[in-house]
Image 1: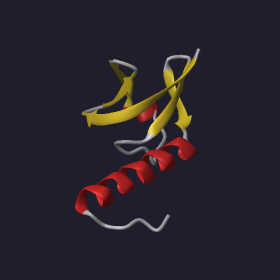
Image 2: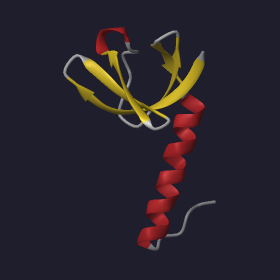
Image 3: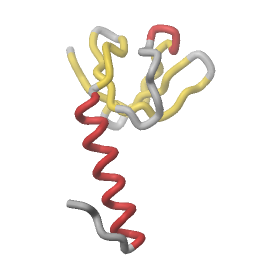
Image 4: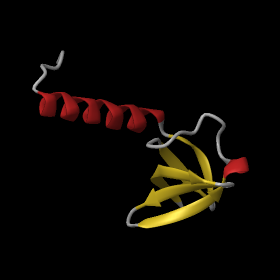
Length: 77
């Protein structure tokens, strides 16, 4: 089954991914090399199959707009 999750943190040899309400550990050695906290990942067959770059970018843009709104700055959109 294919799911998506968000990389929460790295703990030793594991990547901790939030999938729904659950935190799941995956071996860091089997994860994509460019993985970073906050990235949206595709989980399939019990492993991190890849990075959802489009969803990751959408989330980053959304967070940037929220921070700008909090700080009272105008966005360029």
